[in-house]
Image (cartoon, rainbow, N blue to C red; front, top):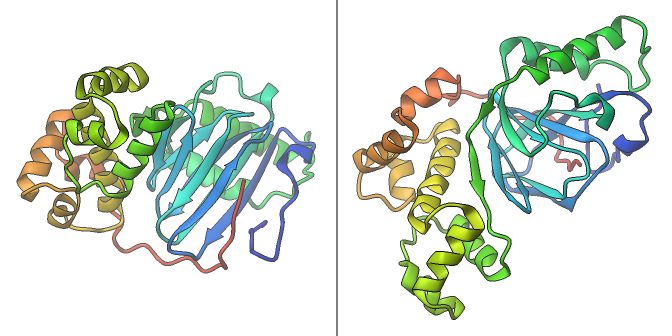
Amino acid sequence: MPVLHDQYQPQDPDRIDRPLYALRISMQATRWERPWHSHRKAQLLFPLAGVITCETDEGLWMAPPQCAVWIPGDMRHNVRGLERTESYCLFVEPEQVCGLPGACCTLAVSPLLQELLKRCVEVPELYDLDGPQGRLMAVALDELAAAPQEQIHLPMPRHPQLRAMAASIIEQPAERRSLGGWGEQIGMSERNLSRLILAETGLSFGQWQRQLHILLGIKRLARGESVESVALGLGYESASAFIRMFKKAVGQPPARFLAERGMLLGDQAPSRDAESSFG
């Protein structure tokens, strides 16, 4: 099966003349990034271990285990991870994406789809379209089209000053600076800043921060961190305060939300392959 290494550069997926192209990716670095890029083919990123985040001009999407990020073709994006990650990667020709989302999103991956992806990465790049391998790829595409969307998404502003502010908050989520304090830093009144955030993201500043905390909380809990550690790391006074916020926003306490999606994976095996980058 294809695996990306620092010394190995895979073929450009846009040059592979098949409806679907699948490969397995392994990352050993504890912090890695695939910088901004795009490709004609749509892409699915499904982490077997670790958590992947994908940023586009419109927002930030996250794929913990049992979820995948779907990236439409020709969409500018970057991909990041903060721990060792193993993933399946599927590239899809534009004419094959009928029934699939037209925007970047996070999809829930069923056990059947996971097994299909496992088989797909073992298929040669130039598989027989009319043989069993071609039929396997077609079944995987059908199952992918049926995957439900998860609301693990943070809208991101396009305004340069707001984008920089959002990046700072994401890097230091425990810093509880007021909206007025952010306004002073970027040279904007609190009222104008509040209006601009709402116009750019569709959320108030408080709602945006809560959505960020939900994403970061899911990510850290899926890695096996305790609720108390996550809560303190996000600037909450106690675990119960974080749980109340999460339950109010999501409708479930974090443990139940993760357990129903099979995300409580504190005993994941580490990656075996060398550090790599991918498209």
